[in-house]
Length: 331
Image 1 (cartoon, rainbow, N blue to C red):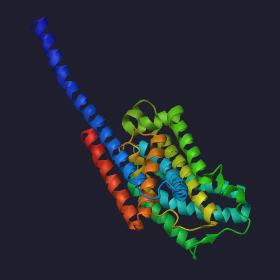
Image 2 (cartoon, rainbow, N blue to C red; image 1 turned 90 degrees about the vertical axis):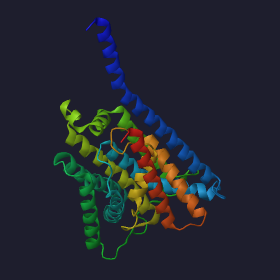
Image 3 (cartoon, helix red, strand yellow; image 1 turned 90 degrees about the horizontal axis):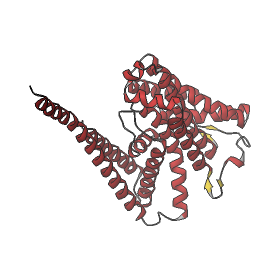
Image 4 (cartoon, rainbow, N blue to C red; image 1 turned 30 degrees about the vertical axis):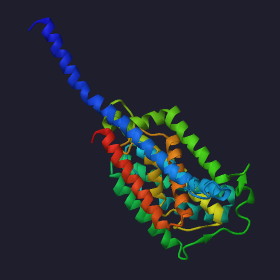
């Protein structure tokens, strides 16, 4: 074979090898455009709803997105780590709210706040330890944790609801700051903290590596079990913020507080563009996704539709994003 024919053969092989990459890039770009068009269409319908831009509706939107958003920020870290999602975060919201009220009644507001944050972090961190160290299936672990949390809560809270004693929760932690609900400010802080962790720390870089390829991360010396456990610890921390804020808002706590938060959080994460397979995502994008989901919920309420329609809308949105992600990745 001559040198010229050999060069042509190499060029042909290179062209064939790059075709799948080009096709995958093209599909990913199409997915991004379709996702953007879908979000714009949802926002157009939402903004066109009568009364949506009124003051009470905006305040309701900011408050609603804060509770769901903190859970979604935690879910983002779990999804980026390659463990898809957790179905126990909603239950963690209710359990943390109850622990916070009990601890505040006994020890005071400040210690109660620390106990609540520590409880949520450890509860979810233990699940991460099972997944990272034992290599247990993340879905099975979250379902088992969900059952255990509800079982223990029902055993220890016979009346179902725990109330804060008078004066336990300071009035200064309720209401608004410069017209903005305190809950939304907490959500903003959680978003920036999570984004800093993901983009400016070694743990964040390791998290993306583990989510992209668990074996490759092990091969380059990443402590995968510590990384996965850390993702769940932080997820529990951010989720516990939601439970504590709900308890502060209502001066009480029960296991109904976190119902359906898992699904809304998953919808926010996927609408924000975090890859369901792991290795790619952003807290800032989840923030945007959470705003979209909350806006849709407020819009449905303003149109007089029942809560069941909110669940249906969230389910359809998640299904559509999963299908688009699958087409974008070429699977």
